[in-house]
Image (cartoon, rainbow, N blue to C red):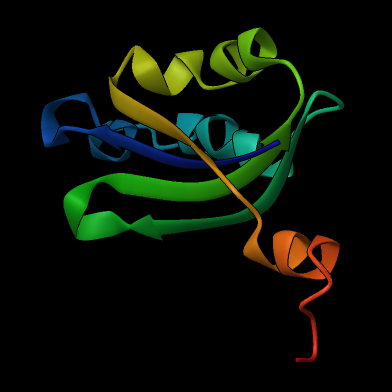
Length: 96
């Protein structure tokens, strides 16, 4: 199943403000995904301290665990989404 994710933290919890920004490398590792959560696309809005992603997962518990580090620094919104292309093709309406 596909999900749209928005993860946002405040400037107070931003690791980019640290004297040693090396944790940023680890914090952004999530964009590589895992065996359980496939990251289809990931984008950021630096002034808002927000990251957006479209991910695919079959286990919601593993999806929640995947985004837990971001949730400890701010708010994470996970919204299930339907694939309109797949739906249109499945309904036999593609190309009509």
